[in-house]
Length: 180
Image (cartoon, rainbow, N blue to C red; front, side, top):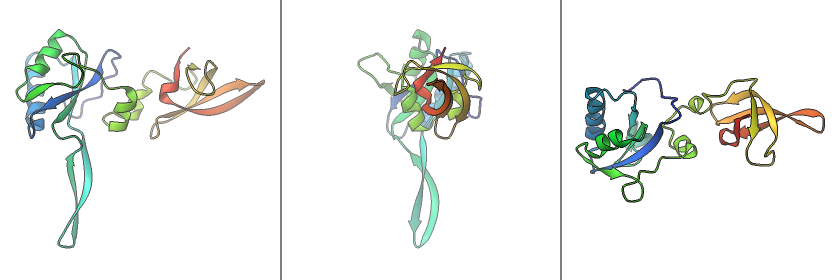
């Protein structure tokens, strides 16, 4: 699963799974094997352990190392249904989904972006330059414009909006637009 093209299926969401301490890698490996064995690659797309780099200085020597951003947690991009829920819940080392009672709550697009588990380019996968979009919040709410360009690093989109008889370029967040 590692290195695969990220899924753009709109039905899939990122979920957070709680594991026993120190079992993150085992859970990831076991879950990936179960997905392949059960032929569920079309329902569970990606399993990640969020990592961050840090500089460790010892005896005057600095080394860049990696550590888990959220110990005891694993992220899964999947389509939630009874079969996928069962597979995740019955993976050895998993204590459950993050969410109230037995109802898993998917991460929002903003949370996924902040965690850095997805390429910002994926957020705009359904949009193209020259496409007409509607602004759904902010000072330009309910205005219609045309996509000029994308800034994937900042998850922004430049949209040309007609105001007072003139086209004006505005920079918006990815979550401020929808297709017209």
